[in-house]
Image (cartoon, rainbow, N blue to C red; front, side, top):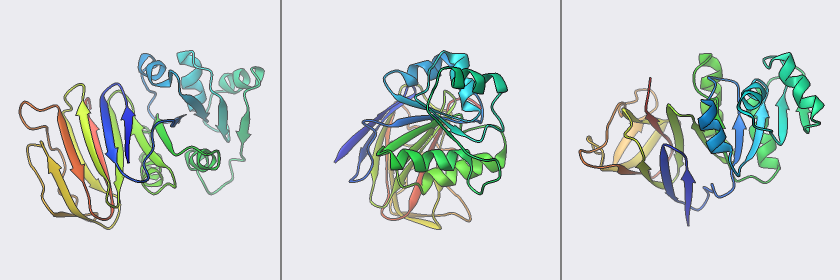
Length: 235
């Protein structure tokens, strides 16, 4: 089964039995604000949910989210007032809780029947939030991609294969284990290739690769584990 993910910076084709990006939910969360023009492009014809501070990003970009999720502790008061005035459906939680708003949003997306989610506003900001978001996305019951105009991270799980076409050349491509080990890692059309490699979470050793000269497409496959494919266009 092949499924496709299309973003302004790349197109990824997954060979998998589980990944499905034909109808992803777009979660606008509260890290580094995505560029407004980029956010409008990616939101076009997609279901958009605002997660706490992400409500302000939607408002500033002229995007009306279909749902608001969060405890309201980081969104500006005027953004919440705007959402309430428009009667946008809201899942509001108390600040005193164990899960983050992003973790709750991913659970709600899964319960709503989405097979995949794109999370923007996931990079930058506090390290603890970025760490939590990345590991939650890696192990989520639905397929997740973290993306903005500067960085993208997608995940491969047991037996999955992805072919990624870059519309603009990234300055770095890294493979980051999100399980203790990732076995049988293979790459094609990267400057430093891997064949039957084992990558370890406690000492990541596949950081800052680049495309092979003359190429704009590369592929990654794994045997067992969870592997993040990270691309960076601007620091």
